[in-house]
Length: 65
Image: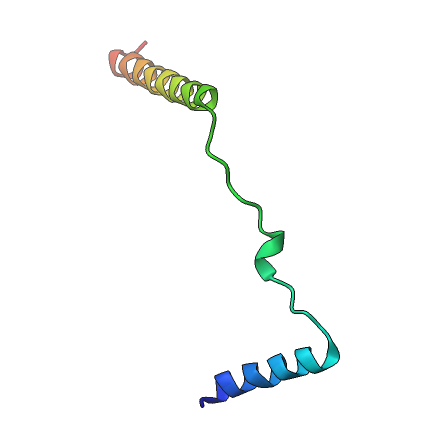
């Protein structure tokens, strides 16, 4: 048995002998949810408007306006 696994085994035996139940560290992790279709549509529209504004600014800059 490696040093790491023996160390973990020591902790496991200590936990069971003291009646301590280990806490799952993933319990506090926030789970991501899929975005709603409305949010996806708004993000796509915002991206499109940004591209149009950047193109307009580039064209205006190239023309010297």
